Amino acid sequence: MKLLEGKKTADQIKEEIKEQVAQLTSVGKRPPHLAAVLVGTDGASLTYVGSKVKSCDYVGFESTLLHLDENTTEAELLAHIEKLNQDPTLDGYIVQLPLPKHINEEKILLAIDPTKDVDGFHPANFGRMALEMDAFIPATPFGIIELLERYQIETSGKHCVVVGRSHIVGRPISILMSQKGAAGNATVTLAHSRTKDLIALTLQADIIVMALGIPEFLKADMVKQGAVIIDVGITRVAVATHPKGYVIKGDVAFDEVAPKASYITPVPGGVGPMTIAMLLKNTLLGYLRKA
Amino acid sequence: MKLLEGKKTADQIKEEIKEQVAQLTSVGKRPPHLAAVLVGTDGASLTYVGSKVKSCDYVGFESTLLHLDENTTEAELLAHIEKLNQDPTLDGYIVQLPLPKHINEEKILLAIDPTKDVDGFHPANFGRMALEMDAFIPATPFGIIELLERYQIETSGKHCVVVGRSHIVGRPISILMSQKGAAGNATVTLAHSRTKDLIALTLQADIIVMALGIPEFLKADMVKQGAVIIDVGITRVAVATHPKGYVIKGDVAFDEVAPKASYITPVPGGVGPMTIAMLLKNTLLGYLRKA
Image (cartoon, rainbow over all chains, first blue to last red; front, side, top):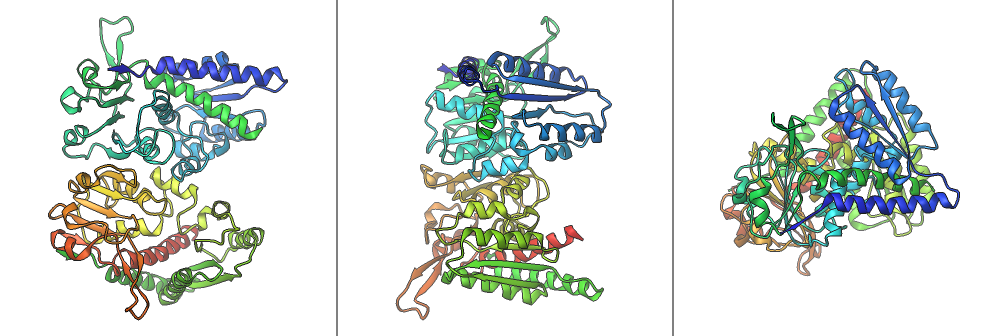
C-alpha cells in the first residue's frame, strides 16, 4: 500500500507556482491576484478563506479578502461582484459558500464573470469542461486528476466507481475521468444515494472515489484487493476528549481499507490540501490566459 | 418484449405541440419560429434539415431555412449568426453540422446566443443542464428521457450502461439519467472505446443506451434477460440491391437482442423521430420562456 500524499504533492505544486511567480515578477510583471468574498462569520468558512489567503501570500500572489457583514443584501453583494468583474488587476475570485439564507446562491454564481471563476462553478465553465474545451476545472476534482497523474496511476480502461453526485466533486470527477485527457479514459460508474447494491459495484472497481460525506462509510469488505482509493470526505466528528472538540474523518474506514489498497489518500492530508493548490493553479492559469 | 415506438410517440408529441400552437395563434399570438442554417450541400444534412422544416410546418411553427453556399466564409457565417441572435421574432435556431472544413465549428457554436440554442450544444446550456438549472437539453438525449418517461420505465436505482461518450448523446444522457429528474436516479456507467470487458458491464445492465455508431454491435449474448434497450445508432450500410443503395442500421443486432429485451427501440422509428420532436419542443420552450 502506498499513500497518495496530497499534502506533499500540494506543497510541491505551491513551490512550482511560487517559482513561476518569482520569474514573472523578476522581469517586472505584476503577480497573479486572487480575491475571496466572504459574507458572515461561519467558522469553517473563515478557516477555509484564511488558508486560501495564506497560500496566496506564500506563493507570492496578491490577495484581497472582501469580508462582508452577515446582513449584506443580495443587491449589495451583486454590486461588489460587478466591481470584481470589472477590475483589470484581478485574475480570479471566489465567493465562499454557503452564503446567508437571504441571498440566492445561484444568482450570485451566475453573476461571476466566467473568465474569473477560478472555482469553476459557473455553468459556462462547467459546460466547457464537459465539452472538452479550455475551462476552469473545479479545484477538488482538478486536484484528484493532478494527484493521479503525478503518482502515474493508470486510469485508461480501468473501472472507476465514483460515489456521490454533487456538482462540485462527484459529477465533475466522473466526467473528467471518462474523457480523453489526463487521468482519463476510465470506464466510470457514478453511484449515489439511490444506487442499489453499491457493494457489488465497489467490489468491481479498480479505482474508487468517495465523495459522499458519510464518515468511514467505505469498509474493507466493499473493496477489491489492490484498488486505488480516493477519499474526498471531510466531516467533523465530535470527540469530547479531543482538544479541538472534533476530529476530521473521511468517507473511508482508513485503518481497515488501507491494507487492501494499492494506493490510498489519507484524511486529512490527502485530497483537501490539493484543493487549495489547484485554486492557486487556476488563478495562475487565469493570469496567463490574459497575458 | 415491447417496442418503444419512437415514431408513434414523436407523432403524439407533435400533435400536442400543434394543439398548443393553435391555441396561441387563436388568441392572436405569433407562432414559435425556428430557423435552420445549412452551409453547403451534404446529402444527409439536406435530408435532416428538410425534415426539420417540414415538421415545423406541420405543427404550425414559422420556419426559416438559411441555405448558404459551400464557399461561405467563417466571417460571413458569423455575421448571419449575429443577425439571428438579434432577431426578436426568432425563438431558436440550429446550425446543421458538419460545417465545411474551412469553418471552425467551435467558434460558430460559441457565437450562438445560448437562449436561442435549441440544439443545446453551447457550453452555457450544457453546463446549466449538468448543474440542474433550466436549460435547452440536446434533442437526442432529451428524446430518450421523454420516451422512457412516456413508457413509464422505472429508472430509479437501475443500472444503466451508456456505450459511447459523444458530446451530443453519450455524455449528456449519462448525466441526465443519473440526476434526480425525469427518467433519472439511475446508477450510470459510461463505457467507450477504451473500456475493457464491455460484455461484463452490459450483462449487468438493466438499461443499455447504445450510442457508438457501429452497426449491430450489441449482440444477444451481451444482454441480460429483461433489459431495456435504447438504440441511438443510425448508420447507412451500403446494400447494392436496395432501391436507395443503403439501409439504416442501429447499434443493436435487433433480431437477436429483441427477444431478450423487456423494451427495445427499433431502428428506424425509435430514437430518430424523437430527436426532431424534441427540437420542436425546445423551440416551444424557448418561445414560452420569452413570453
